[in-house]
Amino acid sequence: MKEHIVSTYDEDLNSLKSNLVEMGVNCERQLFNAINLTKIINIAKAKEVVKNDDEIDAQERKIRDFATITLSKRQPLADDLRKIIISLKISSILERIGDHASNIAGRILYVKKAPESYLTDSIYQLGQLVLKNFSKALSSYDQESQKIAQIVPAEDVTINSVYETCFREHLHLMMEEPKILGFCTQMLFIAKELERIGDLSKVISKEVIYNLKGKLVKR
Amino acid sequence: MEKTKIESKKISVFYGDKKALSGISLDIPEKRVTSLIGPSGCGKSTFLRCLNRMNDTIDICRIEGKILVDGEDIYDRKLDPVLLRARIGMVFQKPNPFPKSIFDNVAYGPKIHGLTNSKDELSELVESSLKKAGLFNEVKDRLNEPGTSLSGGQQQRLCIARAIAVSPEVILMDEPCSALDPIATAVIEELIDEISKNFTIVIVTHSMQQAARVSNQTAFFHMGNLIEVGKTDEVFSMPKEKKTQDYITGKIG
Image 1 (cartoon, rainbow over the protein chains, first blue to last red):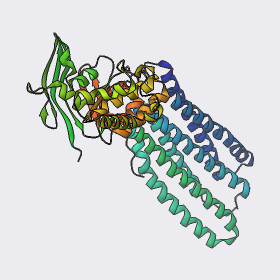
Image 2: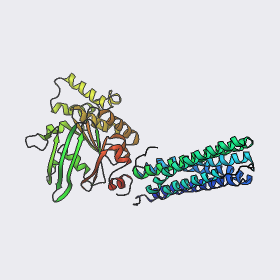
Image 3: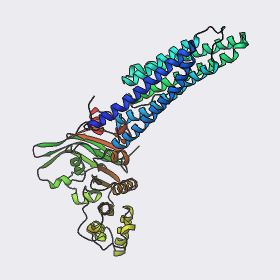
Image 4: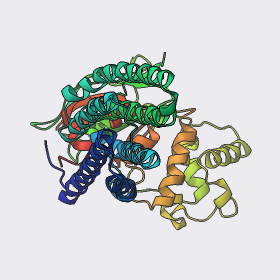
């Protein structure tokens, strides 16, 4: 990749990217911790996840400010312009993903502990798929790889069908044992949060393709 | 479908032994703004000057290829370059009003081409040209003052009024805003937008943002070659050629 004549311009763009990757890694960690809570409930960990969301929000503000200054200072065009536009888009998507992770932890704080008869780990499994696909979306951005970005939407189809299965499974559980109705409802909400993260990972991958190709693919 | 006003067919320009332009083929649509961009010495001004035969005045300059305006070859020997330049006006980088009054600056062209029949008609033409150039309200009470007494931005608009006065079909602009402050530049850009409804405009600019703002079509020149031409929105958001991308993003000089 050729460098700009003005070297500080390259530094600005690199720093924008590394800030965004850092924010992404932070979200990944939050998501990892939140998903683990669906298998082993841990109140202290859940509180930590809720609290850490503030950091992600602060990172989004920082990226937004930096992107705004870069836009006004450099008046970017072509691929430079797209890089900045997608950093704004992706940072706001990451902020949403951070919220979803924090919501998962919030629901865990609400249920406090799992009923003994609740034996399934299907939501944890759904979470693993979502986490893996989110990581792929992040690396497609980091490595500017269209190849990786194209995998993400395909994987999301699997995620959606696993989500449907989870949903039906929990309906059965609730019908069989009305006592765990409250708990299962919260778990279903968690499944919905995960499904949303799946969709948002897909949007990230589309932004990456837009950056590389200059054309927005249909959602 | 847009009508093509100017067709350039394989235009090559030589200054002595030096080739300044190599085989440029470019269509310029009617009543649209076409911007020519590229680094200094890339040939964009040379190309612009070919369009109204300004290069004729340079002895060592030799031109190959054809330029057709409305299908008519402008390098035809029978064609009078003075009449051609009335059809294809030009505005230069540095505002260059004649050392005459504001009124006479605008009236000069119509007078020598005999475009009006009476004094009143001439006054009307001067007024309407100044209005089209967005200058009339600022100068209506001082039409007899010298054109050079105006500010830089006003002088440039005076030059545009002077170009418009002879009812040209095409207006060529060679970096018309490079000597102006941002406010005067914005006024000229607004004016370009306005007058492009009636005139075909070709503008050479070093400001990528200006090209992106004012033009419908953009052509990128590099070392005497036309590298890329396309819709302005596409050239600045997703250029097809690597060289264009490198230039507009500031990666080559």
